[in-house]
Length: 214
Image 1 (cartoon, helix red, strand yellow):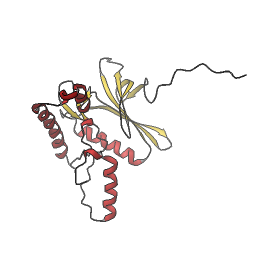
Image 2 (cartoon, helix red, strand yellow):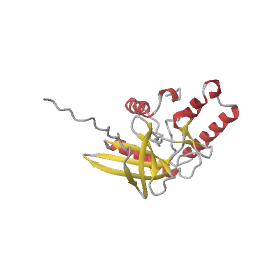
Image 3 (tube, one colour):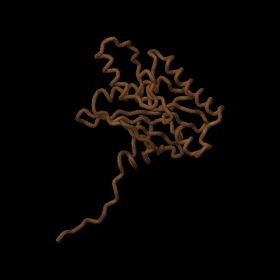
Image 4 (cartoon, helix red, strand yellow):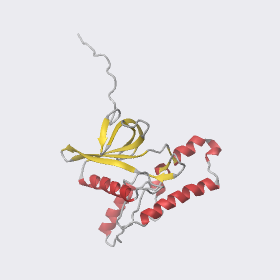
């Protein structure tokens, strides 16, 4: 005679509910607030100061290439720390999972909504921004891009899009997701090199937002 076990409560996926130490921070991961091709972002609460919240980016690095991209993202966020139009990185950690895998955790500034979500929340014809509002967004993005281009070597974000623009609590627009940045400004002459770079462009950019020449 078959005996069925009572239905068990579904286990939380990923980091949900877990308590984590990231550098000097102690946080609890809450719900997923964003997902990309290579990462998930959780709302995380500071367990020492419960009123503080963070955007916790979680990535699994299966090879040296993906780990290198994570380290580059951390480096760029550190170099741009304090810029009013870049999300702040508060702490980060790289954990060894064995068998060549690494787990990366980035605790960053939490911003309530992206530009896409702000437009969608307005609904219908009211979703459009007035000219002054558009210029404010454009100004903040230009300030950020200018800061990246002033670094040595210059930094190209490569994935500028409405989903990666976040509205902070003080009303400023901040750029996030530096996982596709590049500091490679080499001029490619051989067909093989150009083919590799074209593959990188397809991998690290969003088709609808690419410059026409790429």
